Image (cartoon, one colour):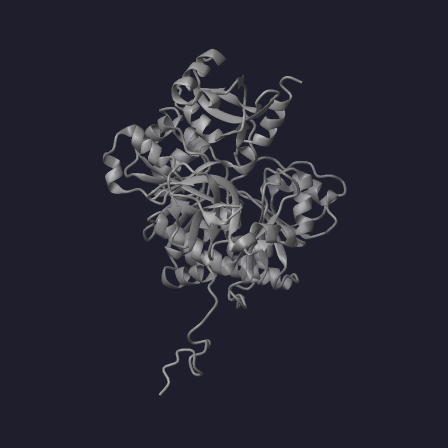
Length: 549
């Protein structure tokens, strides 16, 4: 008898194979814990049974409006219950969710609406004037649904005379069927969302996520963040950013509670920490600064440690110390829009906690190792496509492989082909890899400074500057130099109550860096940031180039 495991009789069938999708997390949560609180928003408390029924109603209403498989539905919303419902109701109709960064300008939004071929937009009343401006610039004419958040109490803003009419979101949802037989993806490779990159070097690229990747990254979040059953998550991270790093789907998997936060402000954050039993939150280092700098009348003693997950540049050691004192455990994550948000974690070893503070800070500055949901993470020589030595010194490009890498860039096969050259996703980030396999970013490829033939990592220079007590924010870019080609130029935001001058910081850097790495120029200013809080180095490079012009 042949022992062939690929023989007839062992094929896939509906009993043993279904497409993976995070939509089933909500169905299960509503079935098993229908009365558990799913969403908190001001005085609103919404159960999982209600959350599921409203998501099905939204899917039903979208279908009745002509939305079907493969259509794009846009959402221009704050961190509100409607945005959570969109993460389920839109794909339940078979459509693809396009989350719009609410801080973008009208021209960029118009580009995204047209490029994604959006057929319907759900917009918060606060952002309706912005959307109307975008629609006036766009080629398409999507249906407009307006969400009136009870927590937004500002009076309505004036609309242009030719404003596109909008239906009311609550009436739209109410028109749907709570028992609607929502659509499973035909294939787990089907698109679930499209998210646009920042577009700082040209038109934004539409990053397409599939159901399989969203399912796996959502579960990977729960494992990585040690989210127990019924965890409480505070929404300080924008849901429009990489679909909130897939946490809108994670919370249903662990039957947790979403605490919505319309605006990231110190008082409501501390109020939620004190009264809602928050266990987890995410955000950039600037959110940490906002939390720990709150005055005593706003801050509270936390009844238990709260897990805080941050990405972007490593936080300064002083900020990490302040967060520890305030009751937060901070973990460093790393990823890109193309990897569904974070796919790398600085997994902390228990014995590291016994090390001196400066050594712990050095270890925390590393981006880390791959998520459980990511198959391969490597630092490669992009020319040879071979891994660089694991010596903590040799730089290469961070590359990813696995199921939590995007499908590709929508309607941009050239960029997709370039991103996947050699069978890996090329991040564009430069890093080293240490002997223990932990990755540490050194720069974006375009941010490396080449001075007199020597490569200088702007991150290394910034880390040295951050250790000075007078420096609140540091950003280092290349400044053209007739002798050396380029030299480092440091833009500095001073810490409150501190002062510094170029001579002071030059002396400091010479104590901590090789002399060729010391900035030749210091600019004390307010550093420009993107709408997601990232430092806009392309703006600083332009300013640096104009300093001697």
